[in-house]
Length: 112
Image (tube, rainbow, N blue to C red):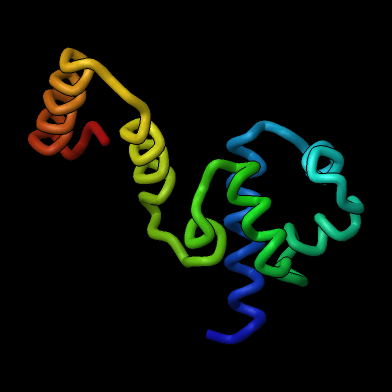
């Protein structure tokens, strides 16, 4: 993978998390106390921030570095949402309902 492709993937992933957070680039730049233009260069895939800022972004978006820098499948949104959901504590009733729904989806792939 070329550097340009890696930067593009990072920009796409960053925009995914921006949309998930339902904030603008400017709001997030302000939250992180960085220049708007700097943040924009990341969003458009011109630059990937350094490791320290990547860690800051993972804390802000509650994600992993790999979520920001790796190319993801079409199912990434579902996989990410499920991972976040499962990291939270749940009672046995919730787990049973979730398993039943997973079995339903497996038996009815057209419902996905």
